[in-house]
Length: 325
Image (cartoon, rainbow, N blue to C red):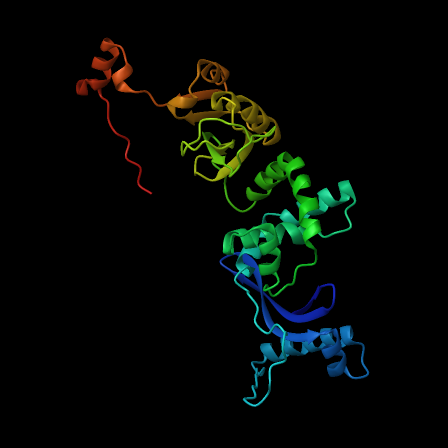
């Protein structure tokens, strides 16, 4: 067992952490919360609180080996709970935290921080935004407020969220490529087949700007929109995405994003699959090479008569490929 210390603006909190190894995966769990620095100092007496905490963790390790450790938690019915003191914490994000650190997002944030010399904690901001988006999607301001219910308190202010978002946007390509490389350490990526499609999102605005443009909305709403193109690998796991202005032809979004993937993700032999809406002549020619191929859908009704007869002739050996998941 070991000691983990989490620091916030106002306190240092001490925890006894036990490392586990289950199903060939490393993880950790909190065995005991020792309290903040002042509480640990009282327990340590004249000893250095950090040294006392380490010795206490070693003692628990030894007792655990000898099966002598006893955990006792006492409660008092008459004790009054102080007003405005937080006693309940949300720990549901901890399993997400394990995935977050396995994917190396903390190191990605450290690299970006070194590049721009930030003074605030970029890793803490990104992690809290991700956890909150999954657990309770809300606005940026509300996300900051809700993340204060986590066991580990946020170490940033609202202004830091606003300052970090343009940087995440600017470093989007770097984040996606590094995330792809890190993900291959824990799961094989089926990158021989890539699926690509586009969608768009509207905004409750009356006037367009340089990015949110009037275009053909999926909901047929008369609002400015932005368009997102998404590549997924053969297992339907997202690979890369790109946001473009809403008035851009979606057929023209495939080649730039694909070129970026080929370069940043170091891919070569791939088969790109799209629907008929993205199957322009330019896109098909771009992927008609020795290393790249292109597959799309085709309406039988629009085929020439001799081709229609060919594909509907059951004696030609056509069959359905059944996939068992």
